[in-house]
Structure formats: structure tokens, C-alpha cells
Image (cartoon, rainbow, N blue to C red; front, side, top):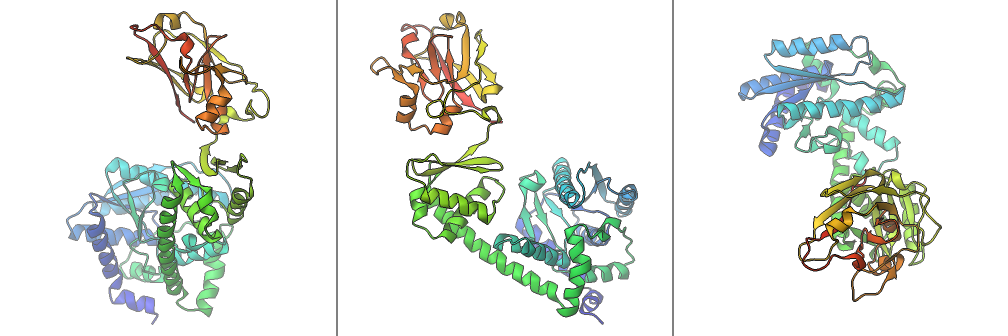
Length: 475
């Protein structure tokens, strides 16, 4: 008799599940529990176990299904889950998603859409704990896939027993848990057969074009024959990797706190660290900002440029979601703005080609200028300086990016200076200057975002003056 069947006959599957749910309830105090149920073997075992536990605890349970539409049998799978839920007296909900892509791209696209749909259903029904049917073999496949991709400890950590995944589920209040993770697929199948459970078979599970299927059908059987029980050892390795990753995260948090100044990294402090420690800090920084994790080669190039470039160099490294820039020995993450594509800094590389946008102010509190990436506010100046509102209404105004050569006088006791000099004095990095618009009357400069208004046109004392203010709203 196999160890899997022996454990199942001893009734350990329900016992292991119950211990997991007791722990989840104690840790998270879920208001409502939901399960993701595809209709396959694993999820039908999860459905039965969760139903029995919730019934014993007088707790409600929701059953969620995602209809991918990729198979001619998808409708039958939905009906199977819906009928099984009804037979147990459980509430059921379904979302249909449209999956694009082909080959291995379909697998990733379907996963993303599936979890987003599950997160939406949890939010709609107030569920704060979502159970999935991932098991020990899934964990082994995940670890092996990450190993083949060259992942570090974070990837080799595999799946957690429970975690929040707001970027995946689109729901920051939701915890996703895997109470079947200690159990192998053989144990789940033995339990299903012993309890007369019925399940559906997804024909795509046999398609070895998908990486996970290729492992499941071609690699894992060979491993099982040569190394019986390898799944448990992979799980132990994942647990060790999780422990190592927690220590790395603690170190990265300490290093980030020591090097972060006003949202930017102090490059001088990075130079005093080992390369491994710098990589660990930067990965942690990217994760905090929900940026896709870059490759080791990309990080190596970034760090080399940071350390080797001269002190006053305007370093730019492109990430798929942002720009990494160095200014005065600090590293900044800056957004990519489509409106500035191909545009150049007039102080250094020539004149911007974009034409200005004419407008008239008619007393609005604010005007949006999407082409310039923000909103122009017209605030009551109070006792401070500002423009005469009647004078401002009479002007044909223009918003534009600067062309070079503009001059501004910020206060009566200060000289009229070029905008470049004002930006340098205000320590505004060159890349920020390019995306800060100016407002003029067509001839006279009235306002420069990031700096202020030209005092030569201020209203006389006692008038209800209007102060201009720019708010950037990157797309």
C-alpha cells in the first residue's frame, strides 16, 4: 500500500484540511470564506472538505467559478460546479473571461484573468479569505519551473500557505490560502475515490506545449521513479528558500531606510555596499513600488552605470514601466510620459517642437490639460501675491513646454533670471524641467510650473488676486 493511500484511509486528508482552516481562522478572522472551484479533481475535493468544515463551524461558504471559454466543454464544467454547489446548499457565482493569445501565452493570460475575476467576485460578495486547491505536486512543479528560469530565493520559495496578492487579485483586503498544500495529488485522488466524488477532466491538461504540463507528464514521473517522495523534499527546499528570503527582505528594508532620502536612493551609500547587497536593496525597492522585477543582467548594467558614471552625469536607464535617473548622486524612479516621447531639454539638446495650446480663463477653479500631463489650478491668493482676476480673464493665454530663453522674476527683490537658472537654484532635475509647462499671455511669461508666477504682473494690494498652481497627473 502506498503512503498516500495509507494516509487517506487513516482519514488524514480531512484532518490536515481542518487544522489548516483552524489556523487560517485564528490568524485572519475571515468574515466570509470563498473557494475557487474549476470542477477538476483537486477543486472538487476542496469543495467537499470546505463544505463539511463550514457546516461544522456554522460558517457560510461561497463557491466561485471562472469560465474561460477555451474549451467546448467549458459550459459543462460550469454546470457541474453549479449543480455540485446547489446539492451542498452553497451559494455559487461565476465570471466569464475572454482569453487572448496562443501557446504558452494563453496559459499566462488565462491565469491573470482568472485571478482578477476571483478577486472581483470576492469583493462583490464580501469574502475576505479565498481558498484554492493547490497541492504538494503543484508546489514541486512551481519550484522546478522557477529553478529552470534561473530564479533566486524569491522564486524558489514556491507558493505560500497564505498570502495577500493585491496586484494579482486586484483586492488589497483579500487573503488567498492553499489548505491542500501539504497533500499530494495521489492523496487527493484516493480521498475523492473513497468518497465517491465526481470531477471533470480538462483536455488541455495533457497539452505539453504548456510548460507546467510538460513537467507534469514528462519530467515529474521520471523524478518520482528515480527519487520517490521528491515532492516533500522540494517543499522543504521551498520552506528554506522562504526563510532565506525573509532574512533578505529584513536586510533590504534596513538598507533602504539607511539610503533613502526624500524618495531617492543615495548613490554614495550604495558604493559602500557589496554588489550582492546592492542588488538585494534595489529588488526590494522595485517590489515596494510594484515594478516588474528586472533581470540580473539589467541590474548589473544599472549598478555599473551608477557607480562608474561621473558625479554630474545625467544617467538614464529605461525599465519597462518607468525610468531610472541619477541626479546629484541620487537615484530616482520617474514615470514614462507618452506626451514627452521624443522631446528634448531645450537647455541641452535643442528646441522642443510641440506647439502651445491657447485658452481663456473664465473663472474656473481649475482647467485640465491632458496633453501636458496635469491640471492648472486658479486658487484664491488670499493675502499672498497673485494676478488681478479681471486682468487675467482679458488675456489670451497659452500653455506650453518651454522653448529655451524664457525669463522669470519671482519677487520684487529678486532679479529676472532665465528659467534654467531658477531650476538649478531650486534643484529641479533636468528630466523634471522638460515636463513642467509654462503659461504666458502670448508675449509675457506669467507662470512656470515648479517655480511660481512672474511678479511683474501681480495685482495691486487689496484686490482678490488669483494664484496659479500646477498639479502633475501622469497617465
